[in-house]
Length: 126
Image (cartoon, rainbow, N blue to C red; front, side):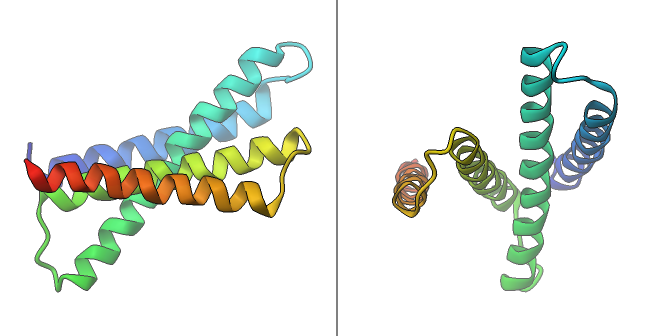
């Protein structure tokens, strides 16, 4: 798969997920259909945030590596964006259930960092 085609797909998914999030927030009543409303908001929020962070990390890596990036950098940017969006989503869920504390924040952040290092370690072996 080409790098430009993959970035084009990521940009399209970003716009579709943000548009669907706006539509869901405007037209779906969470009190009448609680499970469908919350689930669809969570999915569109995670997709929108993941693709936005993927593009942000990719542009950061492009500047950092002086415009010499490869398809591998897009994959790692997507993985890092997904992990950070899960980190944000878990913090929002903990805050919603009133069990949020800075210890939870630190533990979730540590798990995300260790998971990223674990996956990166196995990518270096292959």
